[in-house]
Image 1 (cartoon, rainbow, N blue to C red):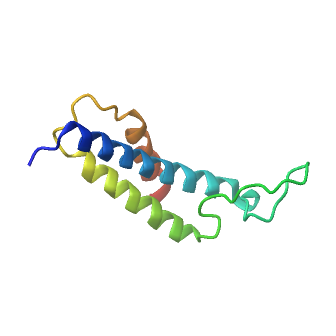
Image 2 (image 1 turned 60 degrees about the horizontal axis):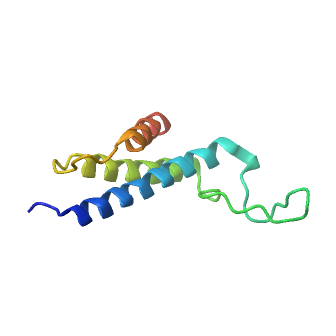
Length: 101
């Protein structure tokens, strides 16, 4: 069953959500102890937003990134994408491969 243009756009947007998850988890991991748990404040006393995945262990972060990458790989294999861009998706898959290896 072929997807219509509206469904393709929705699927692509969902994939970009997974890109965001991968990028956020890796960025949080790279912050190490500087990742915010929601209790840190900036120099003006404002709370620093929680970094996504701050409370995950390294193995849990790898699992989360791996699941998101699997979704991207699965969806990218569909053959009816038309002119949708995969630049950010390919970069996230590559980053996920590096992070989980």
